[in-house]
Image 1 (cartoon, rainbow, N blue to C red):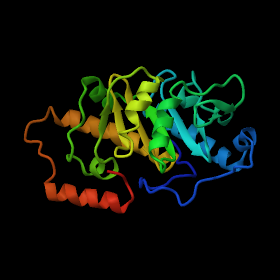
Image 2 (image 1 turned 135 degrees about the vertical axis):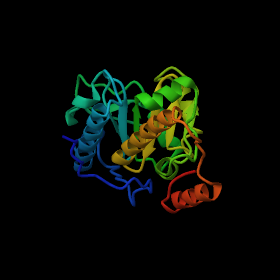
Image 3 (image 1 turned 60 degrees about the vertical axis):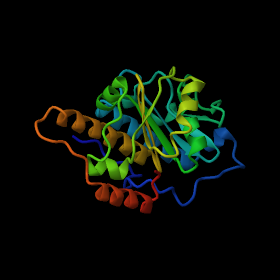
Image 4 (image 1 turned 90 degrees about the vertical axis):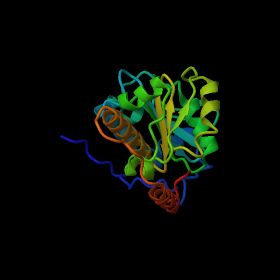
Length: 250
């Protein structure tokens, strides 16, 4: 049975939401209990399950986060993304310090990669990091999938980037992502996996799903006879124009 769609389902446009919750008078603990946080926690758990069901994560790998006012909700470390519960999610500030959450749950060790994207892309509402096999295979090979081959990828992902390897959770990884994120919503992480951002939790997940499907399709096509030419330049430009009209970067 396919996973249910969350109540927050939206098209894959990356146009930023009209407004973002701002609750400056609330304590972090109160903010974590708010209706907005409750809805976001449900979305993060749902997208975590989708990642696990699609085998984008293994063991306790991968992590998800969402912007919540001036803070960030994120998944805990050491938990399979297929078995998340809302009470497991924690709140961190812009420095990555956990400011609310219930023991024994602690923030993901890779939160600084997420925060680097949020700092460099104000319109990013959510970030998903995972290890989808086909995308990670390109990352291990140090290759970016050929551009302009698939309309879905050209329209909804734009240009895919490759970040150099840095230790997961290290400040250096965040520093490598910061200059890439404003122009790339899908970034391969050398020897590691992939990270995507979006205008909602589901949008960030959609980017990951499209990224892995693109990598899988192109890897299979590479073994088929015949020519594998990119779309004509004029058609690629039409897709870039449509991306701009939809408010997407790059």
